[in-house]
Amino acid sequence: MSQRPFRAPHYTTSHAGLVGGGHWPRPGEVTLAHHEVLFLDELPEFGQSVLEVLRQPIEDKTVTINRAQGSVTFPANFMMVAAMNPCPCSNHGDPVKACTCSAGIVSRYQRRISGPLLDRIDIFVEASRVDYAKLTSPEATEGSMDVRRRVEVARERQQSRFTGTNIQANSDMGPSEVWNHCQLEEAAERLAKTAMEQLHFSARAYHRTLELARTIADLAASETVTVARLAEAIQYRQRELN
Image (cartoon, rainbow, N blue to C red):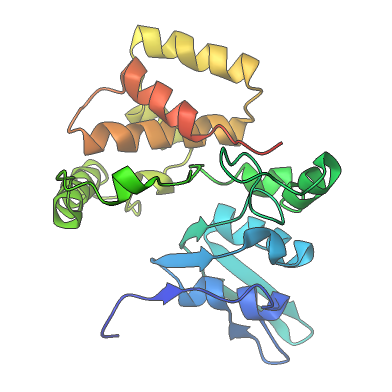
């Protein structure tokens, strides 16, 4: 391989095209994106049955295809990035353009993505309209190379943390590793309990939030998961879907 894979299948992709299949099983997009990025644009437009098959590979980082002749397991440890409009007309919540969709249409559109699949997504970010002043502003921002250096340093911290194990990054941690490496300060512990109770986090969501908070701390070169790091991780898990 001469370059890292970036897979971006069209939303008409079939079940077999996404996770693999065929009479003689062949790898799908989730395997072709192994250790890299699987980008799903227009997420609600994918078939619901197609999206649901992502749950196993996201959780297990492998995909198993069973046939009469036997079963085949392919690697599928990928980073899923997805994008979607808030509604069919794309203007729901826009402060400038009025949405032409009824509340029922908006709700049905957003519910095409099931709760169990959403529970496996760590970060939700709403991309709001960019106004002209910000678009043309000459003010310097953090460049891509600066961000890359911060990410590389954070990855080095994680690799050092997990030396001698099969874990490569914080996202690979299991419950025991989360317990060992995501210890919270007292104020953060209280916040975690409040979030668990009031936001009705599942056990999976709770562990994923701690993993995300650990990563945010690594990006800030911090050994401790402070209340500010945990609050940021919790905020990223808040969905704006209705």
